[in-house]
Structure formats: structure tokens, C-alpha cells
Amino acid sequence: MEPPRGGFGFLWENAAVILLYPLVLAGAVILLVKSRQRGQGATGWRWFAAWALAGALFMLSLLTGFSIGLFLFPAAALAVFWLAVNAPHGRDVAGFLAGIAAVLLVIAFI
Image 1 (cartoon, rainbow, N blue to C red):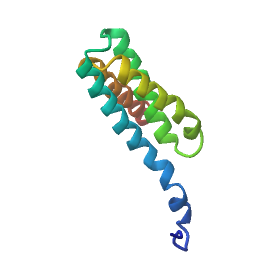
Image 2: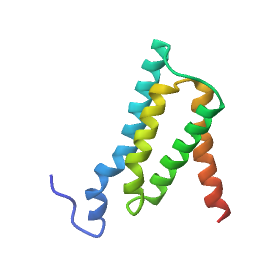
Image 3: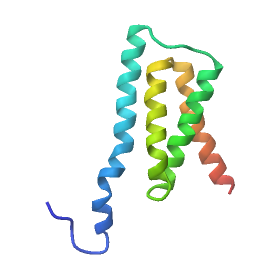
Image 4: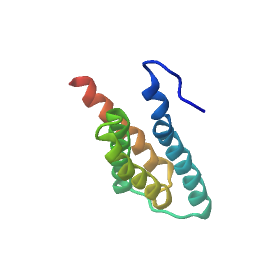
């Protein structure tokens, strides 16, 4: 299938990269559920902080898009997958949302 002609052809070319973000989150949810069912993982404030850093890195990668975000994305994906296996507990995973919120608040204040 050919990309549409016109000024927005770059969106068609980059659609595969954009789809990686929800695919990483879906894969992390699957790993998280399986790890939780097996009874694996640790809990505590350190894991909450690790999830918060992973959330901040993920959101920063998403917001910076096709500039530095492409270089941050593999690190963010690795962090999310690793944490989904090693710290799959609900209270700790809430740190992911806290990290996302922290990045958005910093950007809002800029």
C-alpha cells in the first residue's frame, strides 16, 4: 500500500513507530498479570520510585517524539518490561502514573 500523496506523507511513514508505544504498554500489562499470577516480584517504596522513573522516561520519550524520543524509547521499554516482571504489584505500578504526571506537570510549568 502506498502512502497518500500530499503534505502529510511523513505521518504515514512514522505510523509504525507511533504504534510501538501502545504495544509496549500492552505487552507490559500481559507480563504484569502473568507475574502477579505466579506470585513473583517484590514490593516497597523503592519499586514505586522505579516505576515512577520508568513512567517519566516513557512519557518523556513519547512527548519528544521523533527527535530524542527515539533514543529514549528502548530504555523506557526495557525499564517497563523489566519492572512488569520484577515488581508487578498494584501499589508499586501506580508509580508509573505518578512519573507520567510529574513529567506533564514540569512541562506545564515551563
